[in-house]
Image 1 (spheres, one colour):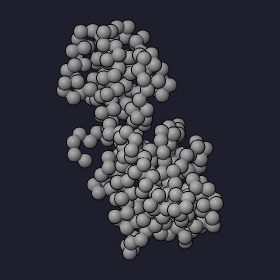
Image 2 (tube, helix red, strand yellow):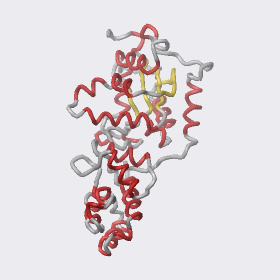
Image 3 (cartoon, one colour):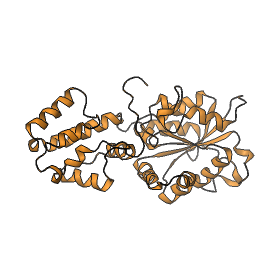
Image 4 (cartoon, helix red, strand yellow):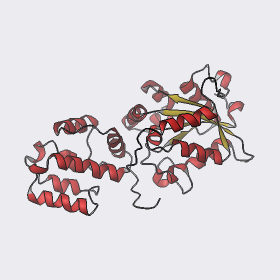
Length: 300
């Protein structure tokens, strides 16, 4: 596809479900607008897995571990995805896509510079990194057609919002505020892992040895329940050891290079303990097993 002139100053962006559930969407859009962009079109999206494959075809081709990108299915199914088109209304000589990519920050939030969206708003990992930005005009045109449909992006022209259809800027800001009336998720990776282990320990407390209960209590008091290896040390005190449904749940550290569980085994073990599902915790743990999580440990 030739680079479409109409998209030179219009950029396709997605506000991802992790940003929405954390009530960051409005703040992210406001930050982008302060940088000289204005929302010109907005629509909530439902993105089927086959459209995801087309949308992220380049990334899928580049990796020998494409199964990791099946986690995208889980992310997009987690909650609303907000499709946006920003128009560059600044007088900056820097191309609009390059400027907004710089404002977004590195894919891995650990590498994102202060002042970028993924750093300042605290991405969890390289998949739960809050926003997607098309990196060039041709990519914006392609992704917009895939996401919004050819009727909205006729002849490679960016779509323009309308109040009648609820796709203009004011409708967009109202939609984001509506979404932020739902309960806010504030748990980081460390919060999720510590809470996950605490739930599992509570469910098997009487099946732990006295030494394991003491170790668990000491880890809780010391804020160490999310540390690598602490779950494994406690799991060794379980009655029945490997046969107990809590054993591998406790041993998993959910980071690359460390033990984790496939989704099916995770859900089976939780059900075996009679524990209800926690969709945010599942999303954070499963993605962090493949993409190293941020351990902010204080100020960002």
